[in-house]
Amino acid sequence: MVEKKQKELLIIIPAYNEEKNIERVLEELERPEIAEIADILVMNDASSDSTNWVVKAHGHTLVSHVFNLGYGSALQLGYKYAIRRKYSYVIQMDADGQHDVCNIPVIYQRLKQQDADGRCPDIVLCSRFMEGSAEYSVSATKKLAYGFFRWMIKISTGRKIADPTTGLQGLNRRAFLYYSKYKHFDDKYPDANMIIQMQLLGFRIDEIPAVMHARSCGTSMHSGLKPVVYMFRMVFSIIGVVFRIKVLGIDAGAGERDVFMDKKE
Image (cartoon, rainbow, N blue to C red):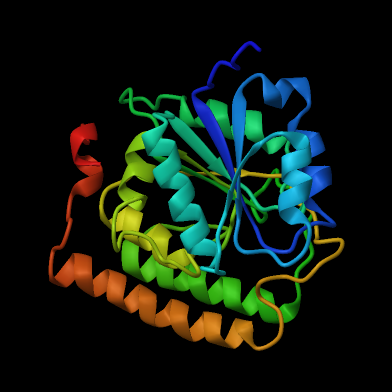
């Protein structure tokens, strides 16, 4: 058996009870234009359905948690895997089919694209709400929430971000190495709080239009009373991030450092 050559790009897919959606996602990712540039890692967060068996049937790398640890913890363990396996780039996407795989090559190229100063972005955010994005409908309540988080990002960093809760993101090694470390990443809801953190630390963040779809089946992680918990947690997390970096100066300038030594990972 010939061992498959590792790519420089890893796609990380957190999954929790997504048996009805993830097979279609994996089939799309197995198209030649994606399979030629990326490896796939599925983080099964203690699903009670057949999510793990679907992934195993497709032959992709799978990590299964014994207990449900949360979306953020699943991603962070994926970052640690990417560091240990020495990937250069990571793209994180959801298992529910909302993130169209046509975005993958675009994100990958943007991560490698230099600006006028010869620098590449550390993080590429994929937006549902920029000019050039595919049409995406949201409820009035969500529009208010997105507007609130845009405002918090603006007053905290001075930066305008169109989609403050996008789960479709690309990261270079500098960014996911930082995220992989203890207390550097929210274990439940890494959204606007992490954008603010990385912007204040000096990491370079780009935002590009994306193609996304509404969830067709299954249950969102923001169902029931979870949105209320999410809002409170996010607000206090953002306050904590700003205080930690702007007032206490913890890790200030981390994004401006040229090199992270692998031996300290």
